[in-house]
Image (tube, rainbow, N blue to C red):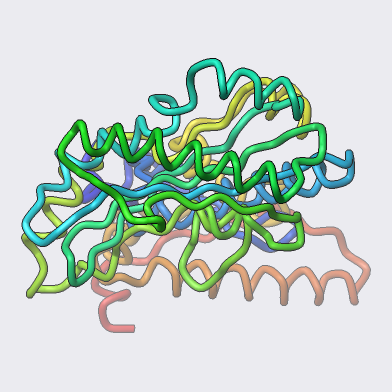
Length: 322
């Protein structure tokens, strides 16, 4: 589904407020894009960051070693993003092969990897790069990290050169050790306004949304459409956070705010569409969350339980004049 239709009603719109006083909206469309949707992308990336941080923390509790790697291609102004992105997206799987890698994995008991893709735009044009968080059961000493980084850079440089995006400088691939307190999950996903190990692997290029850069945004949206921005080895995930199936991006977007329901309201389709068109969805949900918290507090003071509350939607003309 195009991201432009995201947030509009596809049935009766219901806003549920959980016991954490977070709004969850039912009956609206979710495109599930972690790249170009201002509604879905922040939710998806935040959820991924939380999971990646949890995995990093559990790995540290188990005494595992974590290495963080970043790789990019040589780029210049005018190179099409659609041509570079496939090279970057498959960079880890295309280079982590062969006898040396198999020996290194066995030597330090490699478990698996989280990999994400980030796309920036700067003075040298498009700058796509992959970011990986690698988990080992045994400590990888600094000397071995340097050896691994040099070997991986040589493999990545050869691949990029063969495909016309090399030779690389030393910064073309960098590997370093990390701890869970570095919040690498935040860095992997980079939702707006927050950082950390989990979020590092995920921030969309919403700064391209301006009249002067509309053509760049359209190129970015077309090149990233349908692509996954993160991958996590199933065995790794099962060992660190359990065997529950990994949720898809669309499932993460749809589940935002879900939980034990404390307060429920219904909103008419016309009224909700008005909020979407006016860019007031965030404001409306904040008011609902604040009101629910106030009502819950008053009822607790009076010794009453919290019933479901249904609020009939107002006419669109009343909303416009409010």
